[in-house]
Structures are given as C-alpha cells and as structure tokens.
Image 1 (tube, rainbow, N blue to C red):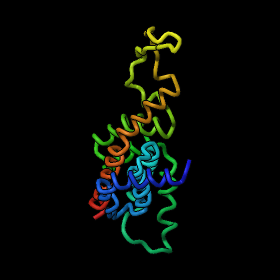
Image 2 (image 1 turned 180 degrees about the vertical axis):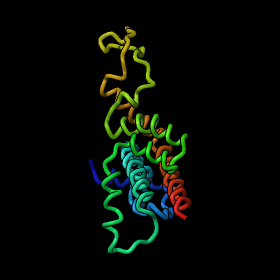
Image 3 (image 1 turned 45 degrees about the vertical axis):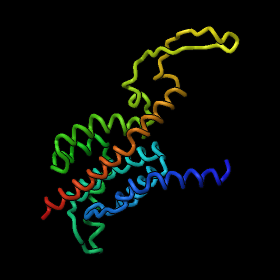
Image 4 (image 1 turned 180 degrees about the horizontal axis):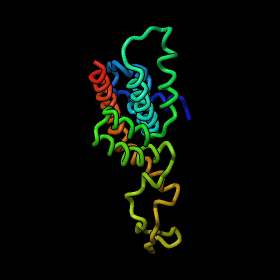
Length: 212
C-alpha cells in the first residue's frame, strides 16, 4: 500500500474526529498521573478510528487503574521522600501488581474505591465482554447476543434466478465473526474509554477524600 493512502486516511480521520475528542487530552489527575500516557495513546487510536486497538488498550488502562488504586490506598498519596520510595511501595506493589481483574474489582469495592453499582458493571459486563472478549480474544463473549441460527440466502452464478435459503451459525464462522467484532468495536470503543476515563477521575477524588 502506498504511503500517500495512509496519509490521506490519517488526515481525514484527524480532521473528522479531533474536535470531538480533543477534550480528553486535557486532564489533570492528582493521583494517577502515570496513566496519562495510556489515556493519550487510546485517544489517538479513537481519533484515527483504530477501534479494536482502543478497546484492548482501554482494558489495560482499567486493570492498571484498579491495581494502582489499591497500591496508593495502602501506600498513601502525596509527596514522599525519594529515599523512602522503595520501602513505601515495595509491599503494596508485591500484593497487588499481579492480582486478577476480578479480585482487584472486589478489593476496590471493599475499600470504598468503587461503588457497588460500579463493581457490578465492571465485574459482570466489562470483565466478561470487553476484557475477555478482546484481550483474551474470546469471540463467544462478544457475539453472545447473536442468535445461534441465522437465515441466509445462497445464489448461484450458473443459475442466477435460483436462490436457496440456508441456516448458518454466525458465531462459529471465523470470517463472519470478524465482521461482527469489527462492528461491535466501532460501536462501543469510544463509550468504553469514556467510562474508564470518568472512573479514573472518580477514584482519584475518592483517594484524595479518604486520605485528607
């Protein structure tokens, strides 16, 4: 593919989407400053309409957010002497850096870092549909709402007037799966990122309020 075609597509998407998404480049997290690079990268994906990449990166952002929330809740927030950084963060990092998403969701709720409703949504919807569906490439999670049997019509070049109805399970046919996954990503990537972006701000404030 010619370089000029990439340039044309990038410029068109930048012109079309930048104004709507530029507000997400203006953020000021007190606790979670290190998440800024991921936020910036995901937003660029959405501007350029890289929807599957955006969802996968948002999954990573969410998991890192919850782990960091647990680490900072235990280690405390605010300035700390540089010579004490290792001592302060070693134990919380050891405890929380490798825990599964489900465990971090439960733990964050118990520590009042997320609400009960947020916990339910994260555990039942985000963990299953978005994280397992994309980061684990489990198409059954994404295509769960599609009927097992779908009526389709088959034609023939040798006999154009003959059309035969057939039944296909779209969930198990790889190239049909790909179409549905692409459409799902296009429809949901921006809303998913918006949700996680707002959740960062909420947990940021909750940590500040807890440790005043």
